[in-house]
Length: 477
Image 1 (cartoon, helix red, strand yellow):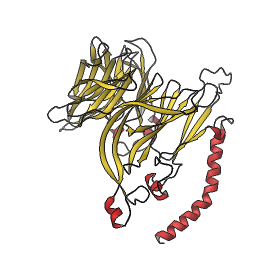
Image 2 (cartoon, helix red, strand yellow; image 1 turned 180 degrees about the vertical axis):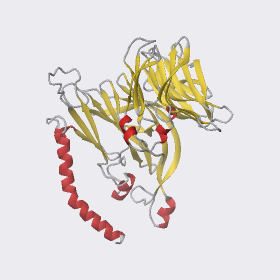
Image 3 (cartoon, one colour; image 1 turned 180 degrees about the horizontal axis):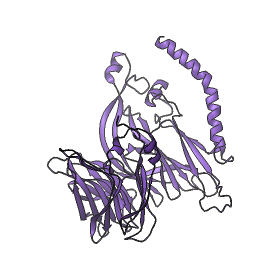
Image 4 (tube, rainbow, N blue to C red; image 1 turned 60 degrees about the vertical axis):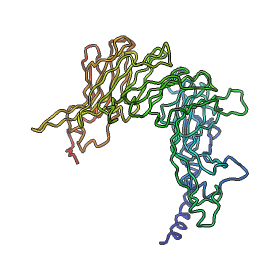
């Protein structure tokens, strides 16, 4: 079958299947949640615009830039219910709002009664004849008596550096974004085919690398607004030629920024003037802060990340640092730090790969780092550990190691063919407000454990795969 024949046959099949697919999709949307919500609470948003309605980009270019998926590549669903609703049947009324997107690169950010959906795409710069990375933002307001309602739409430069680099403060949205590249027309291809290298006729778009970092401030529209737009009021982009933001924490009108460089500069930024935010302080450290945690008092930050060899820029350990900026955000200082070495091939702190893996429990004054240790001795045997290393922290005495929570001390648990990648990610919660003691619940690998942090003893544990382990023969391949 030739390509032309295949396209014709596939199109015929698709046209036959499409009506049934649409009916099923609509039925599933309407049948889920509140019957009164139906399609009135579905928002549709397009990410690919020319910026000039009178001169749209051709259909072929639009299709290429949206990866040929059209306007329905993903469906974002926002479900809400009132947990304080007094219902004898414990049957809470579920409300839902939805939004179709032409991209699957979308995240969800929720804070207080606001939900923000940043969806990544491109926007066309007609004057420069290029497509720039951009993020369209839709904000929703959560209501007690109905589905989340769309509040406003905005646009940001570049794409968010990660899903955690956002915050809401006093009717403003703070976001850390990055521009990696633009798409420009391949002039060589255009000239050989007799084209003009414009958005209308370009046959080949190529990536041109960029390196721009931004802290952006967008203002939420008031409830009474008729032109519901999240207006960009200010931004910061002067991080230097070699800096790349790695982690960002917004606390009130202040941004704490960890960047990537051999010395791991730590920045602070003042966002109180929403039209003119600016960097105010810098601290160079031989470390890379993967995660930044806010302490109970404003102006304090606990950083967890890698300790770095200043001569090579390579990680050599795990570093926990405490910064106190309550007196002067223009002069960030590392008050306390703890460094634990990581011998090659022996220790893996998962905080380096998962932003949710570093856990700070302010009520207990504890920091948990999911850790894997694998050490093989030349004569056989060795050390294996998979679980959490627990550290205690307070602002006066700093950080100190307290104890381990082991979820596995047998390497066969990791390499066993029974489990493969079907493992529970490392997470933890506390059930006490008494700092210095209480119970701690952790899950990791194939087990859940409740620990008394005062006695450092296991209260109870559950092995998720105990029965499977007994009944199945498992191999490491």
